Length: 278
Image 1 (cartoon, helix red, strand yellow):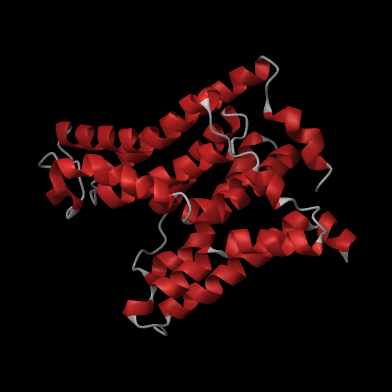
Image 2 (image 1 turned 180 degrees about the vertical axis):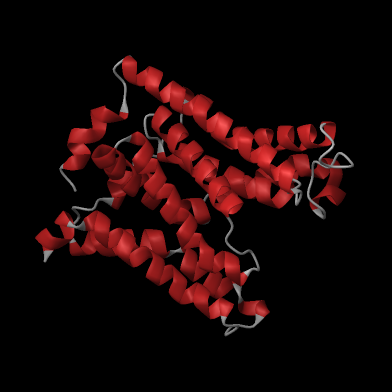
């Protein structure tokens, strides 16, 4: 049993995570929970990535090592630059996109903040950090040890940088869909490409920070800041522009990864260790 779990840990992770998450989120789609209690199935579904890792760790007699994954979450002076970049780059990108959309005429007025939070004004300077740091122990904590800490290194060691990211990002998008549908957000090509762009960006920042899990968690939480506090355009062409900015950032980060690889500090240096676990 242990040998089977260890040998097939990656396949088992992917096979279990969506069914467990969708089990709870499908109940939301079917209206089985009153709105005042909707946070319960929503949260339980969101726990599925970390829950599957816990199950695999127990069944593999610690060969799937969650403790080891969490030990890669590092703070300190030398890690600060990538933590700052991870926290700010996505909000800055969307803000620039909203500004360009106004200047190019895709939006009739300059709107930077979402309706509702915009009424808070300068108080957002305090509110956003208060939201950001506690938020790290919600979705980023439940997801990033699994997506980036567990799955990404193994997939990139096996299939290479780009295909590994494509597999993680596509699965991440698919995993979210039942929850998105429950809240009235239906799948679209633009939505898929946007989420894939966020995922590729997080992957690159994670790799460039020498696989610091906390960097991935910061970037993940910054997405929440974007979706909660910043204006989300409904204009098709404006959405295309922001999507273009996303992938321009991804291209820049991937070039940085390749340059680092030429200097001998590439994801390939992890390949031998990760391939042993496949």
